[in-house]
Length: 186
Image 1 (tube, rainbow, N blue to C red):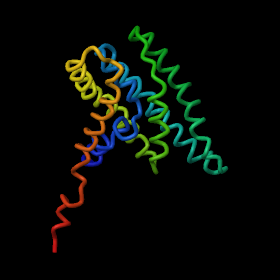
Image 2: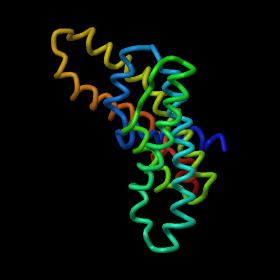
Image 3: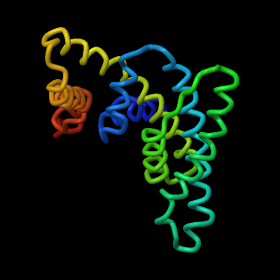
Image 4: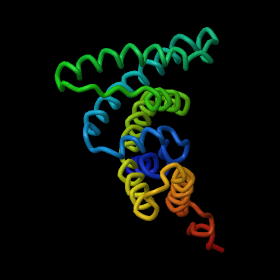
């Protein structure tokens, strides 16, 4: 269980592998304000929406061979839940934390990749936490690039993508076959 958690939290992060929310992570990396509140709201919305979407897909849409429209249903379910949770957060915390694109992409990814309700909930929780886990890493990469060349802001995008590719290669280098202990058995 711990190995699976670490794998999906660090090595198979949707931010690094699929690029889900890369631009949003760079924007959130500019300020520390409201990141924890945004993470909590996104976690609640994504887990509840992914759960309802998975149940709707398995119990209703798949039985009538309409499981191809589950992304549309995921958007509808997410919008309703997000508006409800957003209103609660605005009343209690006195701040707005709206997030759409990253959340809906994570919901679609987790419903598509899971084969049970447990996996759907697990993948959605880990994907959201992984998204917020890599924000400080991206913040440090951007600050380092700004330190080296502060006058060029738009040229950093290519270097950020190359840096993310290097991070992904470094994280996934443990999975090389010749490093596997079974490869050296005769």
